[in-house]
Image (spheres, rainbow, N blue to C red):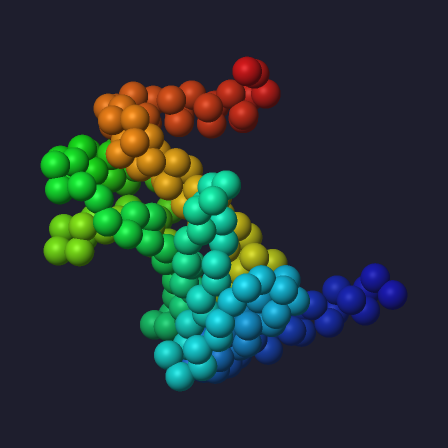
Length: 183
């Protein structure tokens, strides 16, 4: 039975690779909808615009609206980290964003001065979730986990008025401790 599953998996991948770019996007789009439906997340599917909107928790009483798109050969994840920020903290907001953008392996923190908001955006080549069904979920979780860290960092900047360099240093130390298992 194991060999039949492997053959089926291989043939599915070959079939998906043989599709045109538009059809590949359609397949990943359907996989994205199926993932949200099976996970029973609070989400809305917008077929015409090809995006899914989902609500996830940032912190104990704070929720964020996460957007997932499939277009132009990529799977896109986007969330607004801050709806607005105090104008007097603009310089520190940019400094913290720059620190994040320097340490992030994937994704980018975007500061919009016109709306005084901050977003975290991540995109992945469509080929990866097309070939490996679990990659959509992995990408969503990665985006969500990073978003929570970014959200907490900005809250620390705004509420505690902590310096961006200290916030990033603490975050890196915490990540290293989790990785090595030390506290």
